[in-house]
Length: 243
Image (cartoon, rainbow, N blue to C red; front, side):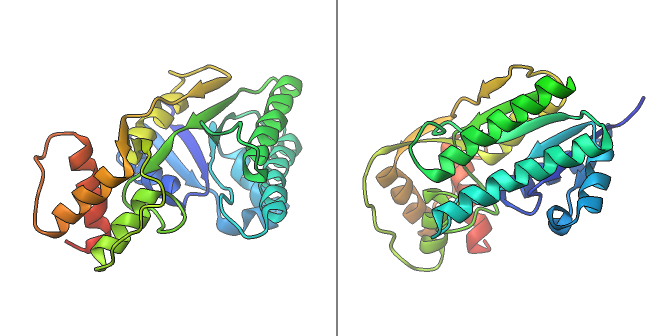
């Protein structure tokens, strides 16, 4: 049986690192991490795409002081990936990571909408397959404080003896990164074939409830081992506290 070759851009990031770890346990998959400098070298990027049956495109900037630079960078990454596939005349399945908040009026969200359209156009003219994954806010180990999510920021602050400030105590829809990676894997295996697939959130929790739980963890509370929001949040907290 041929092994499925799954390429990942942004493999060093939050979702990419967790996805790479999950795929490494599979005996039927070869994981190919796109080199960090591949987008600076047409040859390296062409070598990467030529090896892949599936490409999970996670590489992007989601926060930056210069919104236009963020937009331009994200679109350039998409264009370069498409150019490499066309130069190699390959049509791997492309999974494009976007967000359930894609419709928001910011340059970051516009980069996701426009990037999705570029991949759709590529698929139409090449006969390739593109699926846009609309992802809810995710949390879990390796999240970057003050970047990936309120959960990663709160976990880091509480673990380091700080008290996070609640700006707005609103419910937050979340998915644990390991569950998110399971959904991505399903798409890689051909079980999700929609042009656009919205990943359902697992949890809806108020910001104040997240902080209360983290403070209980800090005080020594350990939740039950069975899957739950408490368990997933505790596992995330441990990754920052070194417990």
